[in-house]
Each structure stands twice: as C-alpha cells, then as structure tokens.
Image (cartoon, rainbow, N blue to C red; front, top):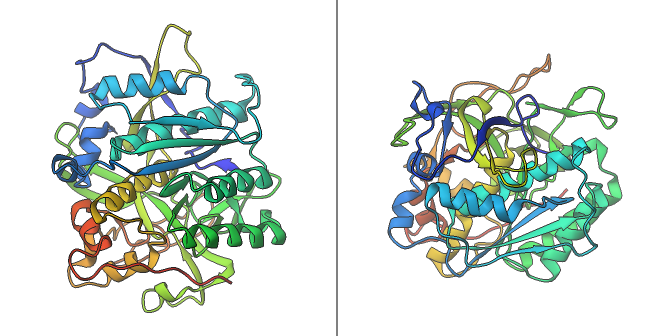
Length: 408
C-alpha cells in the first residue's frame, strides 16, 4: 500500500523552522490563502469553539497506523507544537509490534512514509490536542504487515479511534486479505473503536497493481463499510482568521463505488448505486491550499524542516481528532459512526456538514464523479461543521446514535 499523500506535490518546502512568533507565513497572506496552520483550520471547520469549551480530546486516545518509521517525529511534533503554541499531547507512544526497519533516507518509499507520519501525528494532535497518541508502525507497507499491526492495535484496545492514511485499488488486495480485513474491522466495531481511512489522491482512479498506470477503482480500506472514508476538498478561507468562505471538490479526491461491498444500509436513500460508495466525508486536501507540517528528514540534524502538504491523508488524521473530541464530549466511544453521519446529514439542518456542491474528481483521463447537493462520490457528505456535528454524533440533540455498516 502507498500513503494517500498528494503525489503531484507531496511536500513543498518552506525552509527551516522560523523563530516562534513569526507567523503568519507568506502563503497565508495571499488572496486567496495558499496554506493554513492549525488556527485557520480550526476556525474554518468550527473546531476552536469546542476547544475553548474544554473539549480537547482529554481522556481519549488516537491510534495512527503507518509503515517504516520517522526518526525525527518526536522533534517534529515538538517543533510543530512550539510554532503554533499547542500543548504537547499527554502521551505520545511509538509501537512497532514486529520491530522497526532501519531508516534509509535514500529509499523514496521510506521517505514518503516518514512524511506521512509527520502529517498524521501533527494534524490529529492539532485537532484534538488533549488526546493521547499511539503511533503503531508496520515493518513495511505490504498489505499483510499493515493489517497485522492494525489488528494488533484493535486486539490490544490501544485507543478509541484509528487513522489509516493509506490505500490501494480494491483489485490489488487479495480476496483472502479483504476477508481478514473485514473481520478485523468488524472486531473494532465490537470494541467501540472508530475507523477512518483516506480515499486516495488520484481522483476516481487508483494506481494499477504494478504501479505503471491508473485504473478506475475505489480504494481499500476506505471502501470497507465498517470504515469511514475521507475524501478531499479545495478550501477557501481567510489565511489569518480562518473564516470559512467556500469549498469545492479537489480534482484528485478519491471516490467511486466498491466492486466488493454492496450498498450498506446507512447509504439507502442517499445514493442509488447498488454498491458501497466512497468517500463518506471530506476535509481540505488540495496542495494549493495545503496544511503546514514540520518534517525534518531532508534537513541537517540541527534544523527542523517546514513545508506544506496536500492529500486525503490529512483528512483521515483530522477526522480521527474530531472523533476523539466527540468521545470526550459524549463520555463514551462512538464506535462505527457511518450510520450516525448519514442520519445527521438527512436532518433538516444538514447535520453539521459543509455540503460541497461544485467540482469533480475526473483525473488523468479517467472520468470521475461530480460534487452535488447531499452525498456524492467525490466529497461524500461534505466537510465538518464540528460543533454542530459533534452535538449530533454524541446524541445530545436527540438525533445522534450509533450504528454500523453491512459487509459484502
């Protein structure tokens, strides 16, 4: 599997870490802004009001599943927190159940995963600064190894919500692996663990199994009905205040319909295709409105690298942070949330989403799907209006509730 990082502009360097207090950055001052920090994203998606009320994820744990390792992640997270005046997480643990592969910066795959680790850890923490973080690392990115450590996290009940910022075309995963994966994800639901996965960064396509071209396909594990798939948008917001202005579908947002799973009950009345549609929700992912990360694999040991990134991997981590907030707010684990998400979206007030209705995910000659009112196979139900959405998910407005999907 490959990380769901925008492969056309995975990382745009902004140089070394500046002195604290020098923000905003030039890319935040452009009109429209071309990058965002935590304060702007929290404002745009109405997360800050929750943090101000004391809902920070305290008492909850986010599990992040990645591959290989990043030898600079502790330094990067500390620098990210210092830059944005975010308190350190109450705990940040790194687990490698099958051992760590020695880091080789000359290996492009390992380098990409180290970037993925920075994105996932920093942006999950930015959304839920009071939550503990468990980073669980597979020794490589093979399907079996990724599923093995995900199962480890579930079997050992490591946390309340799991982020999986990776994926591949459904056809590239063996039937046996998909069956095992579905069993593992069902076990997560039985434990009340919420699962997220990125929907991919090649529009309605995914790389072929040999990586030489693209083929129209939904992405696994996002397509499993027990997982909440996260697509991508192009966010327009004020680069200083974060005031939300508009959103459109990101042309590279993964989306489409499964060939493995039938349409789950929670999508009945929302979409008419007989198969499971993805994504379910969305988050800013366009590298032209990228999010700032600290990542030091390419700078001298005494420096901290800074850059902006795009990709649906951001959204998987950020939505995991949102669920940590909801778990704290509701005083219990939400578990599988898709039924609640779709139920909230059907409410008269649209349930706490920015409904994205413009743009499409046609990419590299493969015709995709257009954004439209309600659910669509590009941005799902939309991006979060966090305070309203969390009220619904935690059941405090009388319309929340738990629920799971139907496997194929």
